[in-house]
Amino acid sequence: MAKGIVLTPQVTDPIAALGGTARGLWINTTGDLMHTKGIDPPENVSSFISNGVVTISDVIQNLSGTMIPQYYPVAISTLGGIELMDVATEANARAVVGLTSVAINSGNSGAVIIGGVIYNFPTAFNYRDIVYVSKTGGLTNVAPSIGVGGFVDLDFSIRVGVIKKNLLNPLNKDLVLNIEVLGQL
Image (cartoon, rainbow, N blue to C red; front, side):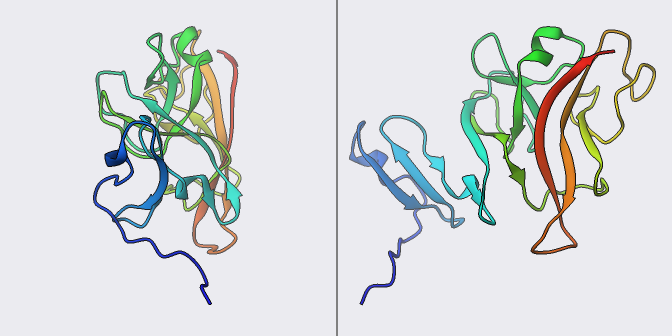
């Protein structure tokens, strides 16, 4: 009696070779379950579910002109893709959408986590630390304030989430996303 479906890892998307409207599931060489739907780029289904909790993400094109590192806050650009955060610009700050789940080269598309929990988040931050967008566009656990961390008058304070203990491995930390523009300094 069959107990499950076994898929052979593939280097490239085998579904795309079937044509523009083909849809299906496949496993890549890193063990991620991928979903191909028509002409859209494949989505990593494994990244949506971790430890029984759903992480909400979307595949968005990097139109910033530069590589965006993993776990960097991004905003929707006027071109409709993502760009790096700039807390000094109101339009950019109010268009904050989430964190990149992988490094995304300029012109490429990649997953942007817009809600949920990032498990085993690589950080030196402490439990209960609130995480904010830093003045340089990365992440900080220091609350934005004029004269602190490079912040100046009229910059925006953006909360990303809070650090908690990972239940499966207490040595690891998780980032619970709760993105909100808190206001202007």
